[in-house]
Length: 115
Image (tube, rainbow, N blue to C red; front, side, top):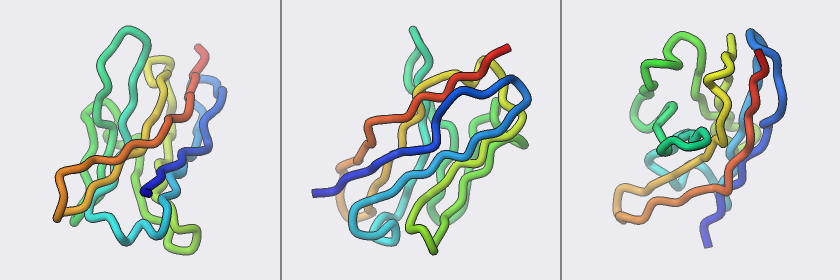
């Protein structure tokens, strides 16, 4: 079964940085699309960044976050710089293959940014 596991969340002061990692069972190369979403308290889950043939980012994180593949570690990472309190959320990894409709989700990792 496909499993996604996020890591790297934690507490950070405003202006600081964190790097999140998503490890997939098997290989990340088995997925055509991988992305990071987040869900803040009382809000809907929203796309943060995605990587497939290219990359895309939500407007609030453009210029601050970078999504990338780390081939050596077999992970998809999210480098988060210049963090703001409004970035506080549970961050989720997801993945998809072109030949199936199923979307896979990790359990999430908490990111808390203090003012």
